[in-house]
Image (spheres, helix red, strand yellow):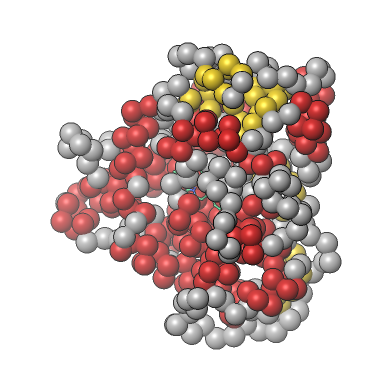
Length: 446
Ligand code: HEM
């Protein structure tokens, strides 16, 4: 096993939980090297990886031996046991193959429209001349996008109703200190009949609508579904190599997965992106020209310096896994630290500086050094969707709204169970009413 601190588990747990920077992990990396064994109250032994070469070994390793689904088990009570996030091995690949196609091709164009429209609705709701928090606005924006792109709902009462139910289920999980709640969920849900706890009720409220909608759409027949642009309809029609389709339960689980994985993350990424841009005058000025390549670099650099998910996990099973010079036994979880790798000075000189130019040259960071979306056969299914959404929203806001940061300081990083979020939600001010929403809003190519 790799070396690691001998501190009591409770002290190591505190090192992970407190402070807005990964100082404890950084200190251990300096002391023990690029692979470190930690012990916390949540996990009696796990290994963190800080070296892209080892991340590559891990991401390219076999899915049956390195189980991401098992590492994500905590999400089970929310997303369901048949979610792509929780499956491993051949079942995982089957679901992934069925889920990927709707995120490509003609649908992406329809999604771009939904993203712009949703941005306009938010911009038009912002106050003028007084500070407000961007994060809640971005949450509502990205949820509306998922409702349209994934579920195929147009804004209206049915969409409003489902949005409310989804927020009621997700909100308690996205609060600070909700890690304990997430850890306790399997227990609570296991006893749901007796406890009738509020989470189980919120989940039932979402399921009721989803199962009714699945039944309604199945009754429409294949032909009617083929004409639709949304992911929901595509999932009902998707068939694996043996011609098998997803069951109602599987469709429900994947829909909730896309909702959960797709909206809080992208909203947080967007809030950080604005925080960084509004505190970097040179970047802001250049971004106002809205060249697509530059905005793309701004988004990527923002996900580097403020990754939304701090790390990903793979649990070793079946046989020991060789990681560099170490042999990791079955049962141990291996975690590439996205947060620490993104701050390596040897890969990102002056790593604390926000410099989109890093992603513009001939030699941008490779797929094992820039890993906000994880990697290998588990790489985020919505990565292109999220990058496109962030670029489109950034362009639209820069085009229409004159925002400035409400404070000279960048927001503090706060750990919220799954995401690293801005503590104050990113406070901004709009000094004058936004410009009109013109239909032609494509960022300029070039
Ligand atoms: C900025 C926004 C986002 C970030 C930072 C993000 C990050 C991640 C990360 C780190 C993983 C785990 C990868 C691994 O274990 O190697 C993941 C998985 C996943 N994400 Fe995202 N994500 C984002 C947006 C989205 C969106 C918009 C969707 C869908 C609409 C989505 C759907 C998924 C799914 C389905 C998985 C599971 C993939 C699998 O297990 O095979 N994500 N994401």
